[in-house]
Length: 568
Image 1 (cartoon, one colour):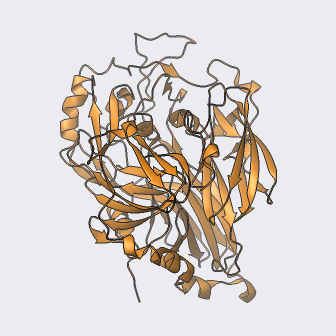
Image 2 (image 1 turned 60 degrees about the vertical axis):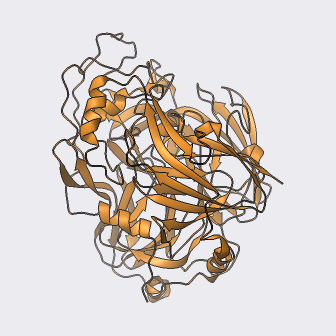
Image 3 (image 1 turned 90 degrees about the vertical axis):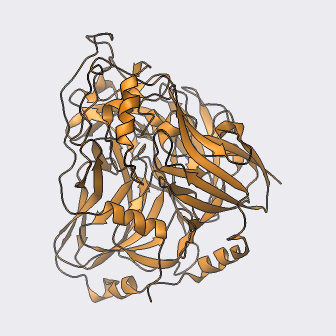
């Protein structure tokens, strides 16, 4: 019997999936602004213009963002930095301590060397693996040139270790150490990243996974192997990394889309398997703003879990739509002796010409060879079975009485702008004649780059009180079940999808555009497409002062966040 997996999942996949086209082209031409220093000094230069970008408007050629350019490590001899090494798995037992730092490192991406950042000198950072129910210590040292913290995304941990500067801790200054205590109440894949200038630090490589193993037997179906896949992109040109804003982010309208895509920190990811293997992939999207639509070259895909739990029922899907900060656990069956391309397959929008353009970007490959695996190692039968996860069903069903309750809070997701370039204001009228539910690609690189966090205010508007973003401070109690309605206003100045993240708690998505979600999982991040209304039900279990925010890095730093207090 076929059950609907998620109206959101299928609708977005349908919007994204298409035929073939090569990855975005990249214009390597440089334009040094005459108002900025030249020579060895750091200077703004025109951002790369993709194939689908609007043409350059007269009067904009000499413009640059209203903030200064910044690149960590700029002007330093690149050879002085240690070369980053691939991520390692660190198994931690209850009570263990990990010593980990953040540092500047040398990275080679696509044959070009860059000064970037890394946790523990690795890209991605070390994968911390522990059993559900365990507690571990992380002694973190900041060896980068910026203040930072570490946020342990998705964990229902004690509030003091959530990593939010000015709320749960002071910033960790260069050379300082902070001790984090992590606990793992939920099975699944989680991740860690900075909560200061994520648009810079996370984009440059400060991210890593935490894999929490189940303690139950037969929690998941058997597979031949388990593989983490971290999806990311960076923005570069012929001179290297495109600079960041020093006092505030650039790309504040749409977020900083990269033009080079990576899997696990590399552009040439490849996995060798035996034909007939079933592989469990743990997908995490760490990109600043890009939502991916992932396919595995025709191999069958079965989604088994989301951010914080298994789904009520496993589900075969044609692709996996994954927004920034989301995680999905999928089983993929490679039944043939051939090469499978892992792709980001989308329908890009060319607003200026008024057309959709199919695009396929190859993220990596899976090489299946040597014929079928032995009878003792084949899990085809288990893969073809659609499991009913009765434990998840029972857990979520205990909240069913609240699914149709009146929302406790209603938020309108919108934006306010001031002092943007006049040409940007006028061209936005063209860019929003048609508004896609998801911004799969950057259609206005120049205007997006010129908009900064000092000119753009992304807003979470409380419909009941009129309070905006950090004016909001909801008061909840442990044991509450709170329903939040999220409406993404399609009539705002620049409507855009938003991945909404709640710290320290878990929630289920109950409705999308008024339609009940039939197959649920516990989550901590949900994408809200333009024009959509998404209802989430929050299980309030964790006391402390917490945040909720858009997980597009530039939107967060342009104000799109609120706070809520949970008392015992």
